[in-house]
Length: 302
Length: 328
Image (tube, rainbow over all chains, first blue to last red; front, side, top):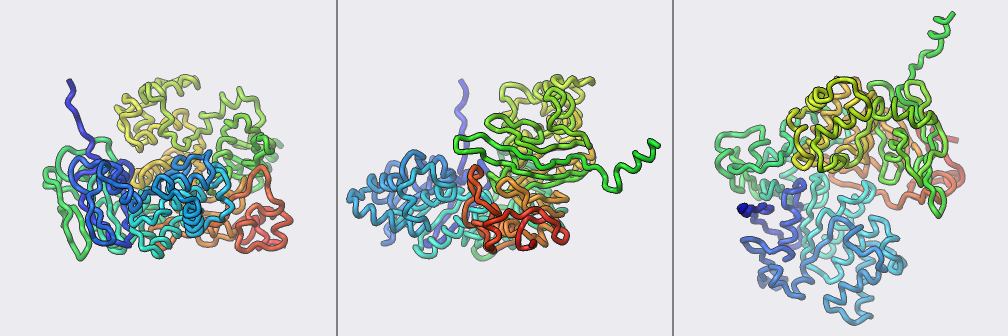
């Protein structure tokens, strides 16, 4: 008999998302960022730990797949990565929006119509698209429909899981601008999940860097980008290509090894790749600690 | 006499390694021919890394597949010529091309090619198969070990199955397979797209190292201009099946002339910037192209002439640009 083994996709994460805030959750694929995002809206049962949602009258609700109610579901929404598979291509756009409204309890057609038109305006799509089939839309239009669908019921918290990753360079900026504007107008809180730190930089108020299931750095965007503390964050910032051929030698200097398939059994998860590894890092796991105001890092260097 | 004609022939301009001339690749569709590549000219010199940049659907991957002669129906070559070391290779018999050029002199790393390995065979056997198919004369096992070292992998990794490798290792192994027959030109189509950014850096550094050590020429295809600026000498900007601008990397970055190039640069997510701009509008339907410039429906500087007549690629300063702002 083989022993049961577990993948610790998200391992001991504590994080707060403030009202009206965009928190950028950055990590490479497999770091657990999507799992964390899904857990925060009750799509995934955590093995241990809690997700608490405070509603506008400051009442607290524990969010789990079993306990989530229709009322709570309206408040916690999600936009998925791939607009080509998250919406049924053979539905008319209007129906793709009408159906979730119906199941959420908006049965009156006139009311539904009003909501759909209003949200469609908000994401900047022309009304005549509503009678099109979803497959007739471009990638950017589809992602806007997906955003409209998540916004229809006035959620207070939105998980945007890599909403621009599948989109062309020419569209990324447009969708990022949309989300930022919507955040400003509605005061909605957004967990913006991405593997692209430069995208998180332009949209998020705060950034959390995730590495193999752990948050390794957390702080205001400016601080994380301009004064990165964790060696992993530093390597990321150095590794992003810059639009300037005179800086190309910088790339050669990235001194962090490639990701290995094996997760270390003890110590800091980053230690096999870390250029500053010390003995302590191999045995003990560093905890997230405040190093300067609002700026947290999990690293023994500090 | 013979000496004279030979020394006269080059006339100062040296022969490029690869020259693509007025290449047209169309796809037969019920609604008409989709003109994925429509009259493209490019040149790559020996030891050069040249970039082709453009958004998805601009035809850049089709161009690379065309050079490899891997276009399958409904796609077809409508016209043009491709010269490799001065010899025409687009219209020679498939048998000759396959025996002498494909993978032997021109190899390709495909988009997402790290998933291009069969999961049921070891890496070593898959690379050995390539050697066998192309009648490699030396010791294949030794060659595999050599290749693995070339891409900075331990030779023992070749004895693993693809699923036992990380994404970066698989991509390296695929590059090793592309180098198996010692090609002179490598077509790299978005070779780092599915990799995390640190691994991407290592792969880019590997390509630079291979260029230096093997004198390899590389055609590097990506939509990421920032990444492209990190390793190319020259850049072609492609839009809707055509080259709209060509210049040295330096000149594209500092002195872009075509409005599309300028917008594409604003759309780059560079960590030093505080914004990313989008390019509103859509690429035209390649089966139903508007008259005039293909970019004019999205162009902030569109003029009357742009709607009527298509601009040709012309020398403007140190760049080549197809735009009416600089012509007429």
